[in-house]
Amino acid sequence: MAGFFASGQVADLVLAVLAAEALLLFAWHRRTGRGLAPAALAGLVLPGVALVLALRAALVGAGWGLVAAALVAALAAHLFDLAVRLRR
Image (cartoon, rainbow, N blue to C red):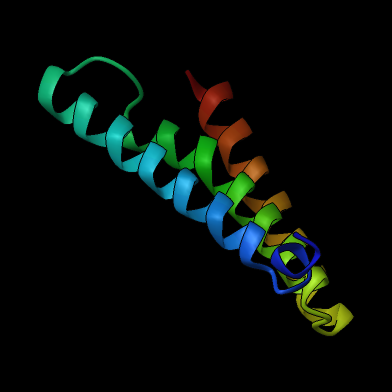
């Protein structure tokens, strides 16, 4: 189990689950017109993806710059989500 975490595979699994969730929610919205619109869905998923990428980078020993870049991307995606929500 320690190798699963140290290799970053745990983050890969979380990313796969996030991708599957996003695809299912997008397909549901497209099919029924209910649920989250694509922009709202992106605002929901992208910050989490960026945080998981930061986690993966940290777990595999990537440089601090890559971890910081992923965290900044998470912040930017979060601010995008807030802007979209506040405009409604």
